[in-house]
Image (tube, rainbow, N blue to C red; front, side, top):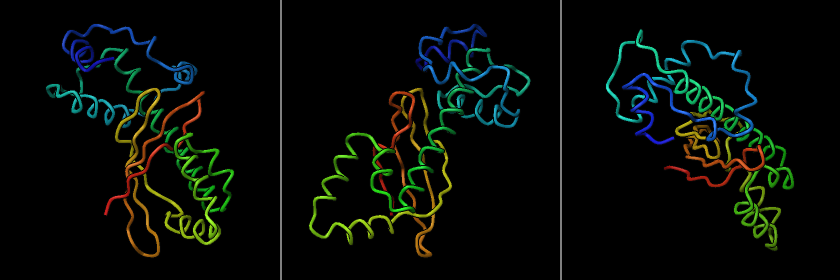
Amino acid sequence: MTNQNIRQALSTGTSVAADEHMSDMHRSIAPADPLPPTVLNLARDAVLGAIGARSTPPTDPLPPTVLNLTRDAVQAGICAAAAYAAFLKAIAARSFDEICDHTTDRLRADLRKMRQCSDFPALFEMWCESYPPTVRSVPAHCDENRAILDIEGDVGGRRVRARVLLQQFNGQWLVDKEHFKP
């Protein structure tokens, strides 16, 4: 769904067919399981801000399709954040194979190159120590196959911030790239 389609739906109050853009995982979310009103309001404000739409009073309802897309984006963000937490848990456990289970082929190839180094145990331990044991994450962008999370955590009393890209393959969110910020 393009920004133009969302703007059109917002301005005319008409529905925009989006079912063909939704993944199987998103279709399986029971529509009878509503998000709390606060989450929907925050998500609604994020959608309006992201597409540059005019601010509308809270009593002006969004079309059902836009609400479904917003709900799905929020749900995707939650699933992606949970996948990143599982990745961090594997790092904390120092389980190389489990870490690789949570990464895309590209990142997995980089990790396997590291494993071929003669001083791998020390290098791997140093790499694992560079990750915070827990993070606070905020989905910056989510769609059906890609999520970008902004994360913050502490490593040895030092604040660590990063932007993490996750890709969804066969219904599973996998860590693809990380960009740590100073």
